[in-house]
Length: 83
Image (cartoon, rainbow, N blue to C red; front, side, top):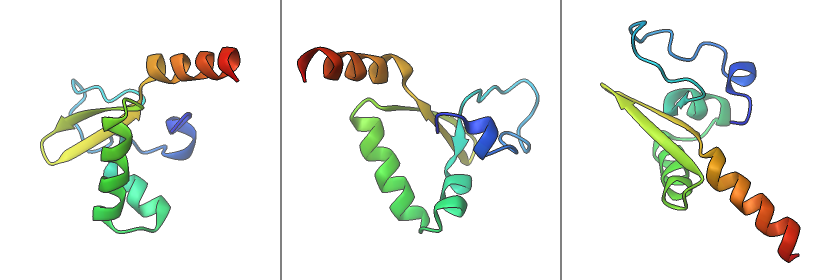
């Protein structure tokens, strides 16, 4: 999910132009790439969101997840200084 445009190029193709999901990846596209069930993918994405690693944006029936860069940077800094 670090480079969604590279790994998921068709993001947001079905959404109106005024809706921005920049950096977000649709659950269905993650499921397709992971070759896992929707419930499994949703479970893991929810765990990562609850941990603060991901943010989500919902539009209609679609939910898009993207990295929470601020939290990821904080974790990276912690590991640099504490380990």
